[in-house]
Image (cartoon, rainbow, N blue to C red):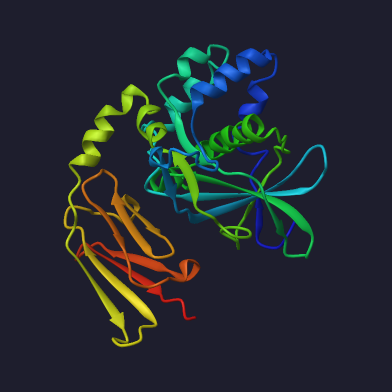
Length: 300
């Protein structure tokens, strides 16, 4: 195990162990009920039906191809273009998973994600490997990062998605890399616009209304120094938010997305500079209700 890595497999909830005894058809039906997958391929001639998604690094998973024993890395990324699943409790999720023999009970809970194609990379030892990029919403990354149950459940769905789309069977003994948010390069993914809209389950209607009613918060962005900035410092006022746990920050290459739970505020802006995403940091002052984000500027 590499330094800084965390083995989070055997202790976590594993959907795979619950699939034993189910037929291939039953597993396939279950997979389709759980996953809302936004196909990520080269757009056809009708490009107006496609939308490009720019992924933001979230976390990186290391595992192996069971057939070739080759290292495989899964870059879990985020984009505000990907819908957020319904909000459910750990107890409700576990109750649903206790009834996996009846896939119909999973219909009302889907996990929207965009699964990209494989790309060849080099690991930190100089050996060849394969990486896949999986894009979810910033809110859902926040959910899985704060729950071992949701993280284990999500990874089981990711493995099924990669098996279904790319026919790659990965070892379920996976490792979360603590010191690396992604491996290799992250390219834009093309997804069908209609998919983003139509494949949402009907039970998400209240969430759509909630998003629509979110307010754009008051904010100010300062350049330090003014003429040739090394940093951009954003100060965002969130007067109705009381805890840092309610704030989700998603910093892209040149984009800043801030949203809150509940969906009281939402800010989505592009910045006139390229940023060093891995070095960005944020803090929320519970007394002033101001979110401060420090974003180093990439120097060419």
